[in-house]
Image 1 (cartoon, rainbow, N blue to C red):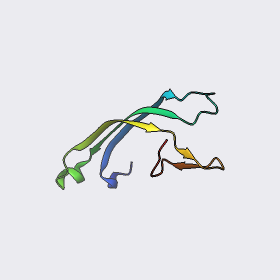
Image 2: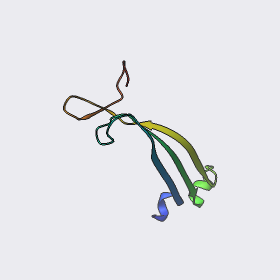
Image 3: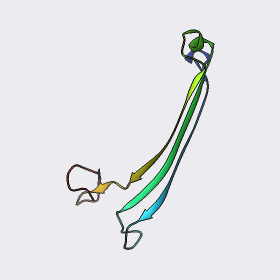
Image 4: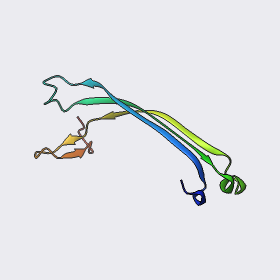
Length: 85
């Protein structure tokens, strides 16, 4: 990283795996559930520390995800409001 950006080091992890598939052929099934984990940490250099931002920060959380809905043409349109899956 360029020295003038204020970040000394940054790293992160993004993991996601499918944990459930609805009934039917796997290739045709549109109902899927995923679980995941995200982690990110950053260390600031002297410029940010002197400005009072501390030495860095970290963020970690787990999440769930579902496969997006599709319209009549097969285009993913997201979960959408209303009826749901």
